[in-house]
Image (cartoon, rainbow, N blue to C red; front, top):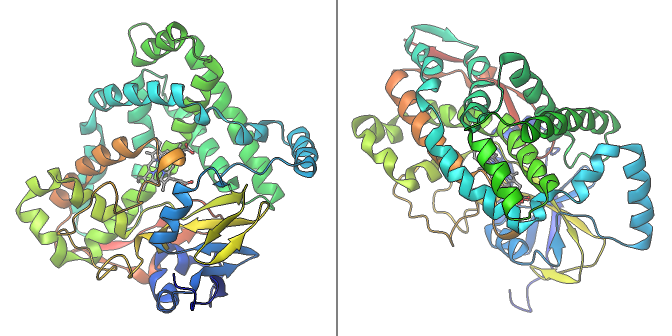
Length: 407
Ligand code: HEM
């Protein structure tokens, strides 16, 4: 940025962050903003949302100055203490075990084993019906719980239908409450959800069935002298991360298949192309469930010429970052010739807050994209005008209905 350019700023757009256009199709609303290099992003509902790839990378790199955790000041400490009293489970949010890098590293090793233990064929029944002629309205009902169930089973958790449903409800409530700090109802429901999954993972972790991955994980935590509370926290985060992520991103992937029949034809003709990481990443770049993640300023930092001071807050609007036309050519196209490497995308965030589920997500999408492309006839037509969303929350966003017609 040169000294002649204006200080970075956020501008209003013709939509609230809760508008479903920002969930389903943000690009037309954001496109004019990218043309002016002084614009960092948009302002909505009292919050600022960064939309540029370069700024997202700068924020990720500056995680010691701009963090997800709130700034600890005398005033904040008092507020936090009061908050923790009012919402006892929410205190976890401020000091959760995900920040313990030793436990995170051990967990990541176990995740690799977990990938091999998953029965991917368990997803097949949900996709076989995609070929039936007529209008499909309830496809998402089938995949809402299935990925969660399969992944829990592979760890050796008890995952009967009632528990899976309970965990799913709990995870959705918690995700809804993230970053919606002003909405007391969502916070209270989120806390109830967190209490439910805390209890489930605590009980399972402390009495794992013999011979399971979970039992091995608990043994390793003990042998390495790690804190079991951190291990439970990471399992809670993992379980919670499974509730919306995979099923909702599946809805976005299916929408891409329906919207871009010409682009996906090459994958129908040559399914082996799905072995390429870049193909899966392109689906996730074009659309996924992650929308907005907040950051709190802890130390002075300058972003695109805008000085930020401790106490300031902003958010990363990931769909804006993934569609930034100053970084991606023809950003709205599904283009499988894009070359991704670890330094040219932020689809899974990065650094301190890097996604713990990225490997799992990659393997999952490789498997289900193959099923969808095999089972969904190429003449299927998306009924765009009848898509429904649940848009009242920030972090992730849900497509609740994705209707399409099969000839
Ligand atoms: C569809 C694929 C997925 C995408 C595109 C995705 C994307 C992301 C992104 C962008 C972040 C960084 C958030 C930030 O900047 O604050 C993140 C963090 C995270 N993701 Fe994912 N994710 C996916 C799947 C999953 C899955 C399957 C899980 C769990 C099993 C998961 C669990 C998490 C957790 C727990 C964090 C927070 C990490 C931390 O704060 O240390 N994600 N993800």
